[in-house]
Amino acid sequence: MVEAGEWWMLLAAPAALLGFALVAVAGNAALDARSAGRSVTATAVVRPFLAVPQALVTQQRRMPAPDRLLWRVGVVVVPVAAVLSTLVIPFGNHVVADLSVGVVWFNAMEVLTWAGLWLAGWGPNAAFSLVGGYRFLAQGLAYELPLMFALISAATGAQSLRVTDVVGAQHGLWYAVWMPFAFVVYLAGVLAFSFLGPFAYPAGRDIAGGVLGETSGVDRLLLQAGRWLWLAAGAAMAVPLFLGGGAGPGLPTWAWSLIKTLLVLGLLVWVLRRMPVIRADRYVELAWVVLLPLSIVQALVPALVNLNL
Image (cartoon, rainbow, N blue to C red; front, side, top):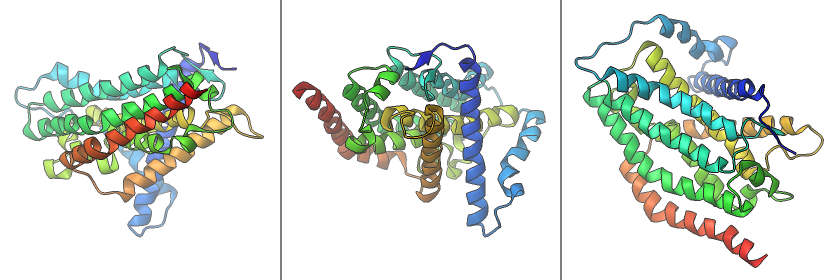
């Protein structure tokens, strides 16, 4: 039985999200050291975190005629939306807000990232950051509809938009098993709205960092944190949607939620390092010609199963 609304979950959910994000950053740093031929030491793992104090005291970059309000709003929206998405993610038998439209809430918070990154690209009044913002919009046109149908597949299987109902509907058979394509598309969507790995096109080196190019200090720290927070939130949401939530033998439900989230997070970190950056226009073609039709077919499978029950 999932219990909702415990006051301590208001603190525990963001804290858990931050912890998962820190694990992902540390794991990525360890893989960086390994790929560079260096030994994986504690210093190598904590190296990314050593830049945080410096970022906190670094003076903000000044641009000619920026829209400071929109710029700051965009920078803040990305990590805040990631944190708000955790309100509907059950962890074991606990969830902050067991909303009847929890799947929609998660998707809505993810869509806020579109607005945030667009504003972060528009606000500096600089060419490269604006191009980065446009790139994310183009990337969003590619990944969003397949991602939505992946979410719809899980919700259709449970005949509910409540995340805890999706968990409860997976007795004996996880949705990742009989909805594998939706699971893969969802994981690709997680990398896309985190704009990491193969979907780092909006922050590409060819445009001097794009949406990150003109940010500095706290602003840059917030945007970078937002990327990893979204990766962690996407990994955590994959567990109730496709991996049966906290279900598992021998261990408490919270332990299984923790294990599954870390496994998904590890998989995502591994993938983001193995795949090259994909140009948005090429991914749009793949998404609209291949992924979207297959996602629709995948969504029809649980619908037809439910009709025949």
